[in-house]
Amino acid sequence: MMNLRLMPVLASLSLLTYGCGSVVVFDSPNSMRNIAGTIYLTNGRSYDGRLNINTEGGLNSTVKLIPNGESEAMRFPVSEVEGYKVRGDYYAMRDIRSGVILGRNTRFMKRITPADSRIHVYEYVERKTEKDRRNNDVVTYETNYLLELPNEKNREVWALNSNKFTPNFDEKMSKIVADCPSLAQKIANQEEGYFYRQVTVFKDKRVDVVMNIIDEYNKCGK
Image (cartoon, rainbow, N blue to C red; front, side, top):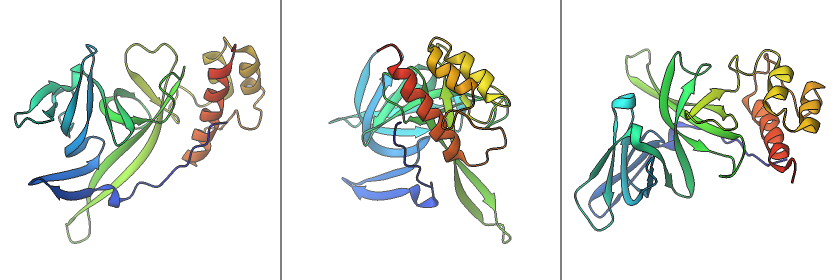
């Protein structure tokens, strides 16, 4: 089973430093300024430089990258961006389907499964701003986990608590991995470590089960 350490996401996620006269901010995977990284486009090209991202405009948003050694920014519509890599982590642009946000929403999220995994799990950090009793803005961060199914071509991901998987997780998930009969049977039998109920409120429990299934699915037939 893959080891996954789930760390709480707090307001301290925001990072502010100064270097070379530029403000460097990593507020969330969808809000950052002057962060060194690599951007990957849907056409297969990639560029290194300082990333500036704000996806509040959804599909109308633009990702900016200032190439190393240059001062002028390159601009890319988010629809042309496959993902980016910063600080050793890869963040993919994916379309959220149900369970987290009503309707559909395209956002960057961290991939926590290996690049060659047959099923992917993504960590999505949503930044929320609310008012306190004195009408001051209070920023919080909510973390959710989403699944990208095998051979997914539309960049869609599904929340673990969505109707894609619950209720009847055993039936729905066993069909998804039906090409690995031994694994599908464990899920159908609701064996420990291969099943969670709709009422499971602990996100880490759901993620542990899914990561366990993915680990075995990746090894199936090898």
